[in-house]
Length: 395
Image (cartoon, rainbow, N blue to C red; front, side, top):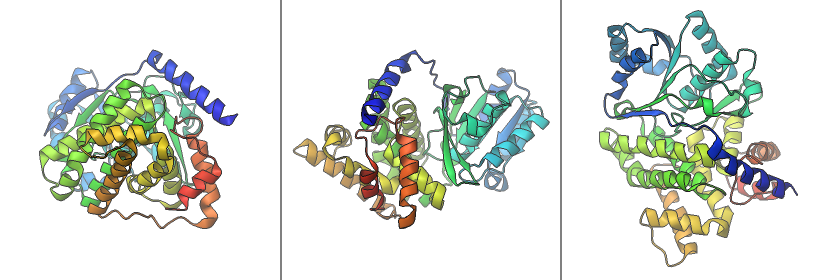
């Protein structure tokens, strides 16, 4: 009965989605595109912004030229640079205080997924001051236009610059919460490959595999629209053709831009088609053990795909065809596609096991994964506790 309820709910949501006022951020790309932000903000009539980023970016001086452009355009700005990986509720509340104290009118988020997730929920708290972060978790709990958000990714992984989602960590319980609402989609997405050139190899690998996971999970999910599948397919092709190359040649602007586009398309794909058990398990492991999200996805992805079995042979065969992976049957193509993911991981130094899972924690990991995935994610196969356990024990 539970499975019937889940599928019915997912099907109905897939039919309602076309009626929801989705938007795609205004899109700017190319080397140096970040320096166009102050003029855009001025044209939007904004006079003061909160820049949310990390202390590392500030210390490296990476944003000094951008600050000069703000001054040229007479745009006032305040910096909040206390964002850490997996932003906490406390971090968000600190940023909200700065925004209010400085009477800011918009937000510029410059960083990886953690920075953009933080910025989204800061905006939500500004327009919904009586609602706590916990009360915003789930689907469509905000439903109010946020202050203008200009998202500038510095990694090619999360796709947060285009998605409806933000993931927040409760530091007291080590639980990760997802907040999803169409109003969280940024107003602008600025993809500047120069900002990703300094990314270390391990982060290039982890964030790239995060983007691949978004695309693959969106493609294989039930009820994914033709539009979402097209975005997912484009993302998979870009990531397969560029990730291992950019891992070896991190200063290649063309490769970096291709990966940013791959992450962007993956974000467009999963923001409507959703993710699945890979993410549900990864969030649990991230909350309990602090495993970086992209790294967890990289290891979990091939294990989950293998466990789905014949339910996704057709979809994985289509992805295999798209990236030039051969095979005589759908099953063989599917198997070869999963092998190619393992080979990508291996070539970038990602091991096939996480080796962090404690046996006594498995029931809690299962509980968290099931709570996140069911009924929200239209996964190819709805698993019970025994099936989830069999996958988690392989990690």
